[in-house]
Structures are given as C-alpha cells and as structure tokens.
Amino acid sequence: MDPDGMEEFKVIARTFIHWATYPGIILDNRAPSVDGNTFRTEQVIRVETNPRVSDNPILGVENSVSPTRVIVGRGNATISIGNSGEFSDPTGTRSDVNNGDNATVSFSGSAGGAGKAILGNIDYDFSISIVPGQTPTIGAQHGAFPAYEVHVIDSQGKVVGTYTFTPGSKWDIRYLQEPHDDVKKNDEPMERNP
Image 1 (tube, rainbow, N blue to C red):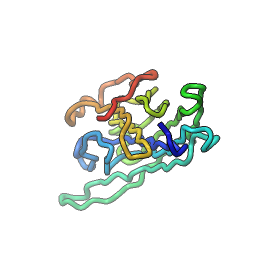
Image 2: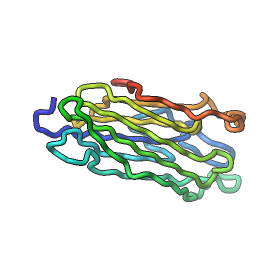
Image 3: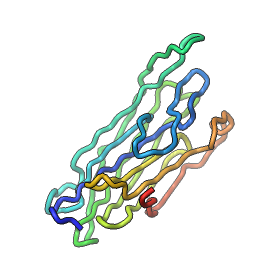
Image 4: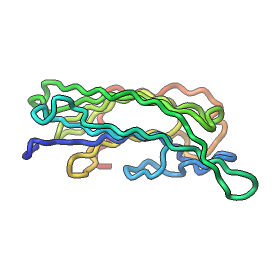
C-alpha cells in the first residue's frame, strides 16, 4: 500500500559488455547486478504511480554513456575514447488499474563509438508497467548484443522487478560475426526479488 500518498519507483536500465576484454579494448567484466558499477549506457528514471502526487508519472531522468578504455602499446596503459549516445525522453501513462495508482514508462536508447565496427551498436526500446504491490511487466526490443539489465526499485530501496539478457557465456568472436534476431518481449512479468 501507499500510506503517505507517495509511491516513487526508480527504473534503472543499463547495457554492458560482460566480457573482460576484447583485443585492445577493456570491457565491463561483470554479470547483471542492480549495483552494476560499469556500463556502456545507463538510464535512471524516477516514476510516480500516484496521480494525486504528480500528474506526470515521470519525475526525472538521468542518462549516461561510458567512454571506452583502449589499451595503448604493450603495457597496461589505457586511454579513454568518448562514445556517443541518444536517449528518447521517456513517456509516462496511467490507466484505471488499481484506481489509477499505476504507471507505464516507455523509453529507448542507442549508442555507438569506439569499437563500434567490432562490437556493434546498442539499440533498445523498453516499456515497463508498474502497479504498487504487483510484479512489474516489461515489453522489450533490443539487439542480441551487448548485455541488458532493467531493475525496478521501490521507495524503500527494494528491487521489485528485474529483466536481464546476457549473450554468450564467454568471449567468442564468432558470436559477434553471426547475424542475430532482435530480442523481443511483450508485456511479460519481470523476475521478482532476484
């Protein structure tokens, strides 16, 4: 329930490359995690489900793109090369479900930059539906590379829903060279309490 009339959620969407390195490029070297400290792109969207608190479900958004670290010479020296990213302004809607105390937030992003010719572009579209006290649902369309994670966190800091996609268990150039269909999800429940 929502005793104080405020049910703010945080939606965190990140892309990352789970391998440690690609020849000459240092990558993220991690598994999906709500505390992911490295990423290629990150969007953090603050969402209010209660229409009496805010007419617009979107309270704020922060977008970030990480630089790519390139190994220089034969040593361990690295330089950072900037990447570019584009993020849509998230849209928020509500329905009559739960007496209007709900929100659906839709957003997209893309990025490219250093290593793009080898590692490819990042492109995604997500739609997250939140009803307090219920498992959030996700609609998703994204490429088969890199890894993707979306976490929904409630006002008490509890993860109430998680979506993850990780391509291939280990670094393999063949995976990058093969064509892959986009990954698509249509209004599916997110994992609860991962």
